Length: 306
Image (tube, rainbow, N blue to C red; front, side):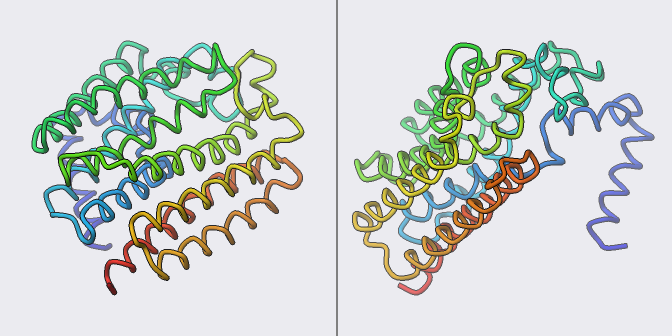
């Protein structure tokens, strides 16, 4: 048994003995906040870390690194809780989401709402250690995150709202480091929005058959047969926006190598979605974790060797 497994086992034993009720319900809360599925955290974390590195022109302070890493995890978990709260009447009709804790009755909608509020407050407390501008921006970030799950009822563009929510961390990284928001940071924001719409459309393609039946809207439904071409176009614009950002922030060859890696991964995703099977589309969505890692690696290596 590894040291990490030993610590985990000791914590599990302590909870089982000292707080048996909490221990019994913990798996449901893990499922609600997707702690067992970290892909969303990574998709939020990589661009946020990239923003921190660029804003600091190198390794940011340990304090800010911890604030944003932990804040990313908290807000992604909060977003999952409010998403399940909003989709309580839909998830039971979709094969992929039929086992979610609100659907199975393990957690109530009220408990999911309180989880969202609690995690959001925890994230806000972290930001109190930054500056006023970053704190002010956090209100807009939380508002957009809370709004996103409800948009699929009213528009075929909920993925655009998600893109905005997932890109706020970049802007807040700049305000936290520089106490200002340079115009060039918006290039990174727009780039990340484009990428998010692309990969969340792949994600929506997994459930498109069910969404059509229950009346849920998405870009996957809006794009129809043009879905793969539009996704590829969005990915191309993402790369172009990052090239423009590279010129503004004087990023060099290492960054371009990271972009080359991301472009190759987009080509692989094109192949995965060729048949538009749920399995292939989901694999393409998951592959975006490597896209984010490739871009961040380019940023990290640029500042390491310059």
